[in-house]
Length: 112
Image (cartoon, rainbow, N blue to C red):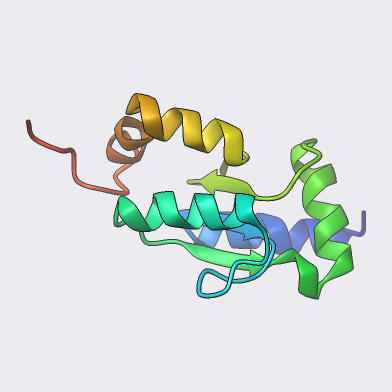
């Protein structure tokens, strides 16, 4: 993995509180797993940025090495790797994702 791709990833996850590395774009996901994570974040009204790994082979390989996680999509919140589609889905279904986003100041805590 080149220093440039590492620097790019570090820069993106630092500058964007919620950064999603995915296949395709938020408007046009190109795999079901990426689409599911976009749907969850959109449902929660979480502002997020994306990077399309299909447009950049170096990024596609680099993000997997950076996180030591073999699959795409990958979600980062405040510079920390949260997980892929299955983890994000489980966290959302249990309410853990909403709690984490509220604790990190990304969304307003929901009042019951």
